[in-house]
Image (cartoon, rainbow, N blue to C red; front, side, top):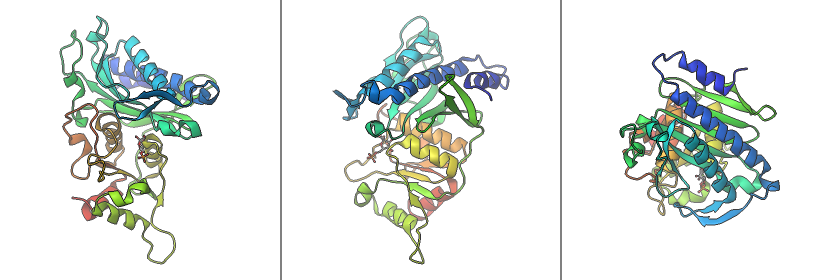
Length: 331
Ligand code: P6P
């Protein structure tokens, strides 16, 4: 039984030149995740269900828990000495931790503090997604927009937290495997529960919201029909599973295989999901686990971002299913 803190410290032994700042940053994100998990579990009785009465940069109604989770992650990251600034789905502009301590921090974080918040009032799974980059601006000065507008391939670490039937913290770094940790609420400790995660090459589920079936391109509809195809009038090939929360759907795919699709559609030519703090971190983890992630034309992590809140179509999951989709249906 190894804790998240112990694991991140032991990882340092593999990299003697490491300063320990990335490990410290990941522990800080783990602390914020424990705080948010407590808020999520108490939401219905702590009167933090429902809307905040504001609209975010995405044009979405902000849930009370969205705001609380956002404030929690920003406060913990600002108080650490490992993060120079943050981009959040909930904030229009970059958040610069402009003080003598944080201007010397090597990393910046982009995050969706509470993904799938439409699930909150029904106690369905929700999550946090984060992405970590090394700064490109000089240490000692405040971080800048360029520190955040980097290709997904430059990510140094990425991960997610699933607030579901248990709270699970999953992260991977550029040079080593993806590992999952389950929260023991009685002790407030994350314990290693999913070592060296890999995505099965195939799978039996696909995640798509059929509300948009007639709005997506013909090749995508043909793929979806192939997912449902049955040559004997019996069961189709795949089961459709859509949790309404990318973190929940992707966690299932990391464990059991499958594919998640959020394509472009007539009313959303760039799709709905955000490149920098949903698609890129999930693509980083997916490729580390042996899967693939594209926007239908190119690798997600090859996309050069123009804006911190830009959206991207995303097809992501098991290698064999992604190859079938790409070779037979997309470019
Ligand atoms: P729709 C949640 O809002 C989210 O960003 C993802 O987590 C989820 O997969 C998707 O949007 C759901 O979108 O249009 O199906 O409700």
